[in-house]
Length: 97
Image (cartoon, rainbow, N blue to C red; front, side, top):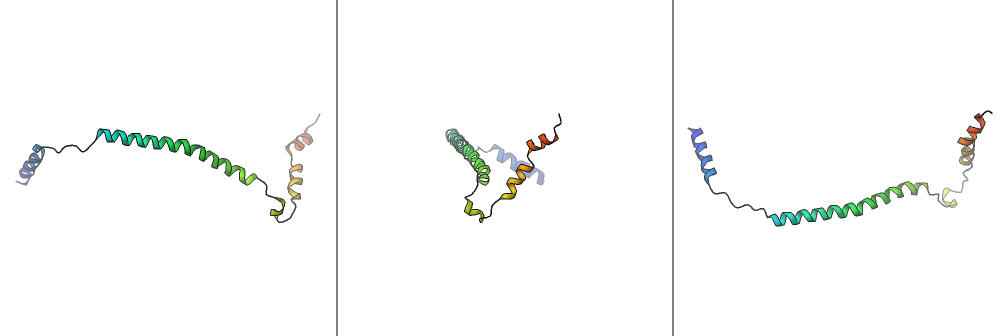
């Protein structure tokens, strides 16, 4: 009994006229164009900005600060270490005629 009443109700719903669609093709096209323009603008502006930020992140730590900002201590150990462990000096020491 319940099955027949449900089936009748479903047929009744299916036979009713469907409401008109609320989709506007013109609006959908315009919205798509706006999204595409926005995506292209972000790519055109964002990519160079991201690259500049990456370059700054690499360059800024390697820039030496003025002499007074290091606390006045000379960095004598790093220069001596660099000369002592030079790749060219190691090649000359290990080369045999």
